[in-house]
Length: 123
Image (cartoon, rainbow, N blue to C red; front, side, top):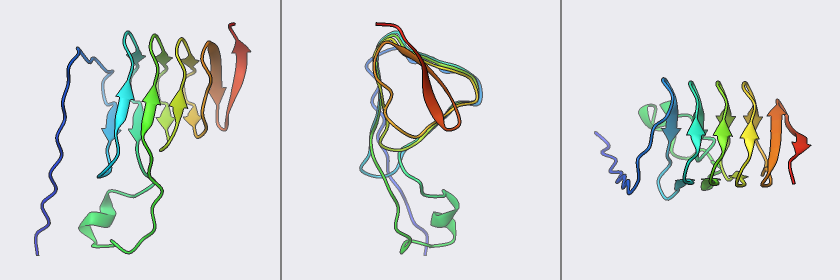
């Protein structure tokens, strides 16, 4: 049996993201990206921990964690960053290259690493 999934994407603003960046939405979740936020190359934003291949192999019984992702205004997300489900990144925040964002990051700071940690608070 063929499964058909329907998603609606509404854009009220100009969105420019780097090459090879992806936003992986899971049914019932959202990604909010603030004004004047830059998303560099090869960034992946996920709203669940579900493997996209599960749909192909009909693994619907697997428990998944899902949650909206919120990226504030005037942020900069560096190259090769992975943003996990349910994370909030505050306004005026920089996420360094090659980071895994698995927890909330407050406004006005610089954070990087895997696991991510706050390197500098700008306030």
